[in-house]
Length: 300
Ligand code: ADP
Ligand code: MG
Image 1 (cartoon, rainbow, N blue to C red):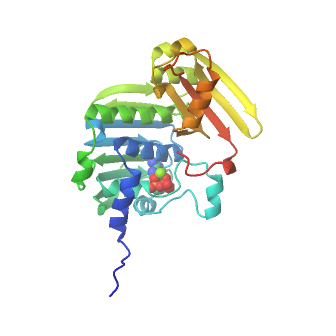
Image 2 (cartoon, rainbow, N blue to C red; image 1 turned 135 degrees about the vertical axis):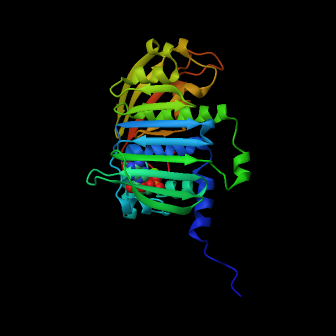
Image 3 (cartoon, rainbow, N blue to C red; image 1 turned 180 degrees about the vertical axis):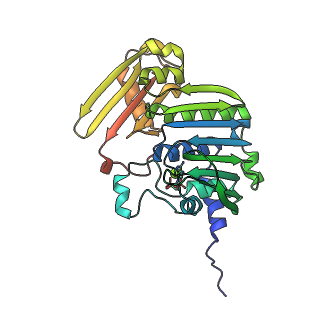
């Protein structure tokens, strides 16, 4: 008798959710990246209970038609690549087509979306991966996704979430990092009915970095730019006097994508050799641009 079975899409999505969605901040990151990929210029994020009870992201991006709105929640459904060769030239944040199905597998999701060419929008509801309904809905151009009751159907994972305050901290960090890479976009974050930040489009990197890292930094940053064959480095470095006791003020981007990069952290530290004491770490917001074909698409 056969013992090997191919898993159903629902089970596969729950497993994928285990990797894609570690905590509420991962959901916000995926959804905001989708908004940016959709060309949004205004992104509003509303959070309650550290994102456990509610995450709502509204954008004014391209929106989706009724069919795309439903297909978007299928596994491996993406508008961003069609061929494996596209993997070598990825300019969008997403391409795996895993975020929406993974999020919908472990929460209650309601999405309303409208594209420019239609006068009426579409509302899609999904709970624990099961489609509840698709109907016409009046809405502004763009997309709003509401994610409620994260991990309601996977209590073991719900238990591993940290306090609302801790999860909110991770959320704010994720949004701030995205906001630093897109100065042309407005980001508004409201946590438990309180506006935490409203980052206006057109701010300089210094202004936005100060809004994110602390007002004091505004006068303690130096702008830098350096080039080498196939590499460009630009951004802000803090004066030695504005250092921290840990690496929390070091934010790195490769081709505008935020990364955790210990090697860049070491390089930065080496650049301050002789200027800092043991246990002091420079603050920096640095963008490294590399030829697209030289970057592993899995970089994160
Ligand atoms: P990926 O981003 O890897 O393509 P996702 O599961 O995150 O996969 O999204 C699936 C598809 O749904 C996207 O490729 C895009 O076409 C569409 N989509 C998702 N979010 C939005 C949005 N906010 N605005 C417009 N289209 C969206
Ligand atoms: Mg995506």
